[in-house]
Image (cartoon, rainbow, N blue to C red; front, side, top):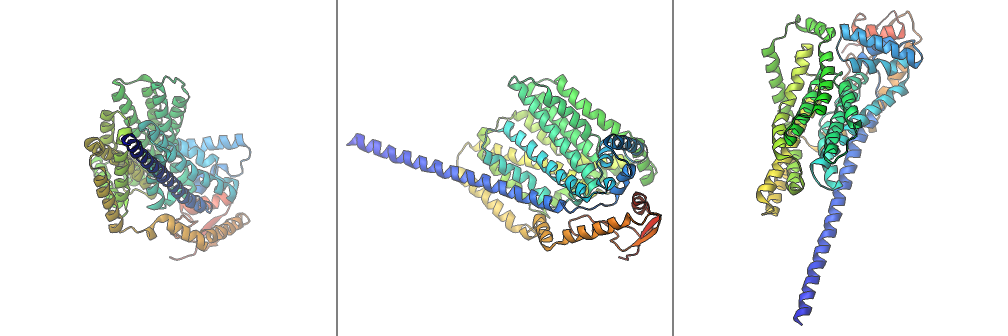
Amino acid sequence: MIMHTFFQRNGKKDRGYMKHERVQKVLNCGMGILSFLAIVFMVGTIVRAAMFVVPVSDDYWYAKAGIGVSGIWDRFISACKFTHEAYKHEQGAYFTSFIGSFFNPVASGSFLDMKIAMVINVMLVFGAIVFLTGVLMKNAANVGVHVVLFVMLVVIFPFTVYDSFKEVFYWYSGACAYGFSIAFGLISLGLFIIYNFNKEVALTGREPAVCAALLGFLAAGASLAIAGTFLYFLLCTVIYFAIKRRRLEKDNMLIFITCLAGAVVNWLAPGNLLGRVVENSGVVDMKAVIGHAFGHYIYTLRWLFASRNYLVLIVSLVVVGYLIYDKIVLCKGAWIVIGVMFFAAPLITVFAVTLGYGMEQVPNRCFFIVVMAMTAAFDNLALFIGWLLGRTLKGHKKMSVLAVLYAIIFVCFIATPFSPGEFCTVALSRQLYSGEFQKNYVETKKLVDSLSGMKDKDVKVDVPTNPETIGNFYSFFLLDDPESRVNSDVAKVYGLSSISNIREE
């Protein structure tokens, strides 16, 4: 009788445990599916909007060298010549100058090419973010797919919901200078990490290292904001492995030096110096540059935590870190060091822009990189705090801790001034549903096609006078001065004597 009762009780206990396991699997699966669907919706919305991008401003500047040039080899030569001229007189961004000219859809006169290029840009940027996040999670912790997908959702959220980042996703020139370039930089970092972890399990293939160096060199030939930020994060990664292994490895340094060489070539371009002359007579006030960098650092903090609901994401990652603390396999000392270093990355971004170009403002496309650097630092900090909580408490009062964290998330979500109705993906969906982007696309295509039949004429048009006429988007615009650079570039591409805008706004 006693033996029967013992087995009966254990049987009930086993059945209860199995039921709990089944419920946990269902919850995990549900979280993974919801995270995946949310990512698809957010990225998919941007892809849909990118299908209606039209030529804007610098797109015509990049296109000048390719007009009338046919054949891949001739286009390659003309793009190289354009890059050389831009390097001497405009900017040092050798990679973005080349791809901006070589692949330019304005030069080919195809709106379909523009659509393909911009969709690829969106997919490449978010694909790179997903790739790097997946690499980090795979090598940092032994967790399930549902956790990885949730972290990916949190990482992607600010770049899809907080702002449309129209100069990156809805402007061809911005895509070349920032979208494609930052994607190459993120992929380079991911490959560098893969290469280093492969060495730890006796995998000696050099392919990831070679690709990391090549893509890193190209990323360093983009905007100085990207070059500086990418190199800094690469340096942090090199330092992580140096601390972990207690030695600075030659192959890692070789990759870093290769990328650094590309950044130096970029920064020393005569075109950058000419830009500083135009802005401030070539004089760089280091005190002003540093003060400006700190000012934008504070602004970005306020934008994320006061104007947006970023604190909700931070606490959510603290919960993740707390739940998986015993599954994290990072070198803790190295993690702490680079975690502290990460907070200097946004300063590096703004500093590079101001020092390289003599600019005081940080345009939307550069702000995209600042936000990326800032969120990388805080996302990492949140996971570290969660790990520290888990390691300190070791499962004691687990439900109480989770209850407090969930309550904080709820309060932050309710208290934030940034409601779901203001989410950028929601606004873009409304604009797509109303046909605002589609209407602009059709009207702009009709206008641009008509310009091809007006060679050697003085043309007057009625179009917007700035590219931000449509909310969350970039539209075709012209100034009222036919001698302006924007108007002159459009006139040269279509063989017009001149083009001016009669609209008054």
